[in-house]
Amino acid sequence: MPELPEVEVTRRGVAPHLEGRVVTAVVLRHTGLRWPFPPNLSELLVGRTILRTGRRGKYLLIGFEHGTLIVHLGMSGHLRILPQSTLAQKHDHFDLEVGDQIMRLTDPRRFGAVLWHGNEEGVLDEHLLLRSLGVEPLEDTFTALLLYKQTRKRSAPIKQVLLAGDIVVGVGNIYASESLFKAGINPKVAAHRISLARYEKLAKAIRETLAAAIEKGGSTLRDFMAADGQPGYFQQSYFVYDRAGDPCRVCGNEVRQLKQGQRSTFYCPNCQK
Image (cartoon, rainbow, N blue to C red; front, top):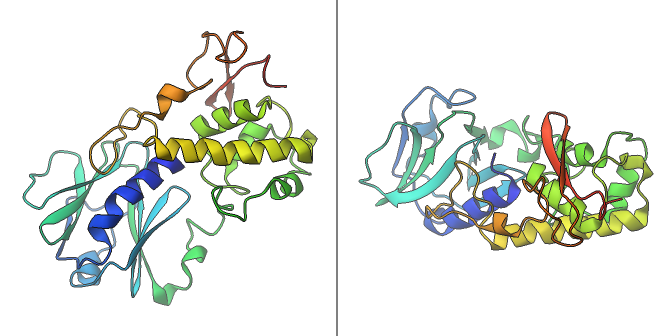
């Protein structure tokens, strides 16, 4: 599924086409995706100006004066900016029209979401889907000390703690494996056994790994493409993810794979202790 870098790449791609523009039409081709579409979405948005775009974890945020449109790409979704006249295909479920262009959500598996949070409902961070999210890994609030303090009573493997998203958000399966390799930490180590010094290395590795992935357009997952229709190419830089049986790019030992919480983890037992 698209992770934080893919969502951030998407946000950066759609932002210049949306911010400051007036919504001229909303097209809903189904009753909903993972959850029902807001029934009055067209009335809420048509004629309104898009003030800003943002991101919280894997949620894309499109801000208006009176509320925020929350978009999630699910497991297979992507957004594209297209000419207004582009014919819809089978899996095109939602269009946000801004003049002669549209932002179109394509989602073959329909696990994505398009939701509305009005200002009258309270602050956006208290939305049901956002309130339990951890800190953003690319912001100053994410520190090694935070990781250390928040894991003193966490006996689960560090890989699972990262994926939980309640301490730091958006470090999904691919980038957790890559960050742990970069920090030299075995994904099976219990989170509470990791020292502050090692968390310094991990926090730095997470920031660097995510920043590099964003710079390279994210990873080309099975269904992911950026807003301009181009794939990312960070997967060409993977050290361990999806490389089971291949030699480690650092030491030459065999990269191994294991299952953690029904997700595949990749690591080098020689480089990661």
